[in-house]
Image 1 (cartoon, one colour):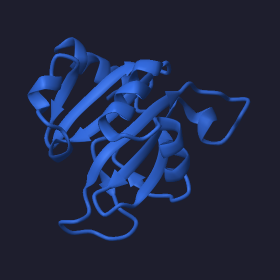
Image 2 (cartoon, helix red, strand yellow):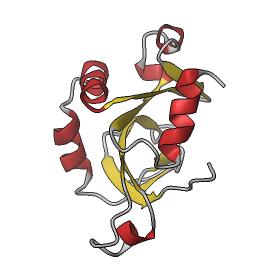
Image 3 (spheres, rainbow, N blue to C red):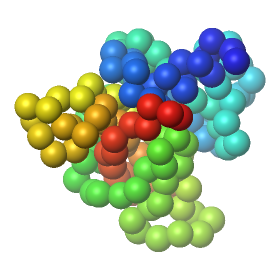
Image 4 (cartoon, rainbow, N blue to C red):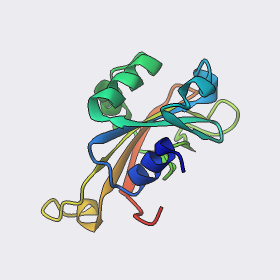
Length: 146
């Protein structure tokens, strides 16, 4: 597996709490192939897993949005982000106008003192933007077997 693919798998397992995952749908990227030196090709786009500040900078460069401002906005609406961080279910509908344009995600290490979901394992936080303009968020316990 390529280095970028191994980083992606490691992120999904919750093993990269200092990194940021950025998914970009192919329709929003000039050339997916240009990003494959640092990313992983997925069905409808590319996934980048980069160190924290580099990941935030890549997200801002690709979307024009500040990563933390976007996350704050997306947190206002609960939704379903796919466990592989490359899609989701828009809370405002489905159809051709409802697909994930981009995702910003990070992992948080298990923290039994916080309780709840965080006591169960490493938690992935995913923030998605739908093509219709809706933003939403989700969080789940990482599957270390992924």
